Image 1 (tube, rainbow, N blue to C red):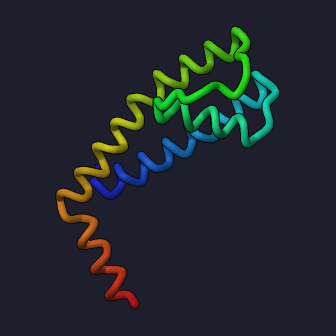
Image 2 (cartoon, one colour):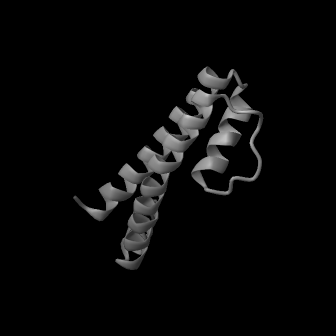
Length: 101
C-alpha cells in the first residue's frame, strides 16, 4: 500500500473513531452531540481532562474500548504522517497542486 493511501486510510479511521465515539456516548449516556464529541476527543487524545458527566457502567466499558482502539490507531496515523512527510511526498503533492493551477 502506498504511503499516500496509508495516510488517507488513517484519516478515515480517525474520523470513524470520532463518529463512533460520539454516537456511543449519545446512545449510552444520553448526552448531547457537543458533550459526546468533546468526551470522545479528550478520550482519543488521551488528555483525559475532565469527564463531561458521571459515566454509567456501560459508559465506562465503552470508554475503555475507545481508549484501547484509539491508541493504536492514532500511533499508526502519526507514523503514516511522519513517513509521508519524510519521504518528500508532501513536497511532491504541493508541487503537483501548484502545477495544476
